[in-house]
Image (cartoon, rainbow, N blue to C red; front, side, top):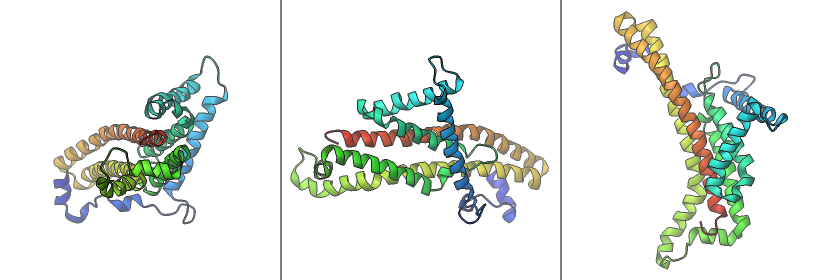
Length: 260
C-alpha cells in the first residue's frame, strides 16, 4: 500500500501528529479530547451508580457487570500486587482502570474515534496521582527519612557501591516511574491510532482517487485490514489500562513493604 501511495507523489497526505491536534469546539478550552474526558468521566460514574443503585442478592445484568469488573480489579490487581492491605485501594484502582479503559476505547468508538490518552497531559496527570499515592503511603508507613534511606541505601551492600546506587535508586523510583507510566500509555495509544488512520485513509484514497484494479484491490485489503486492526487495537487498549493499573498497584505495594 505504501508503494502505491508513494507513486502518487503529493496526492496522499500521510497521517501524522497534526491529526492529534483539534481546534476548540466552544472557545479555545473545550476541545475534542476534553469532551471525551468529560463523557468518559460521566460514563464511569453512571455505570457504577447504576450497578450499585439497586444491589440485591441476585444481581441484575448491570450489577453483575459492575461487580465483575470491581472483583477483577480487587482480586487480580489489588490483592495480588499489594496483599491484604490492597483492599483500601480497590476503589481508586477500579476507578483508574475503568477511566483509562473508557478513554482508550474512545479511539474505536464511532463518532468519537480518538483515544484521549494519546494526549500526553492525561496519562501524565493519572501517573502523578498514582505517584503521589505511593510516595505518601511509603512516607506515612516508614517516615520521611527512613523511606528514602531504605530506598537509596538497601542493607547488605558495600558502602562504595552506594555512591552509584543511591542516585540511581532515587531517580528510578521518584522520577522514572511516573514517566514510564505516562509514556507507555501515551505512545501505545498514539501509535495504534496512527496505524488505524493510515489503513483507513490510505484505503479510502486508493479506492476513490487511485482507481483501477490495483487501487481497488489494495484499497479493499487496506480497509479490511483496518477492521482487523480495530479489534486488535481494542484488545491493546484494555491491556494498557490493565498494565497502568497493575503497575500503580505494584508501586503502592512496594511503598508499603518494610523493605522496597
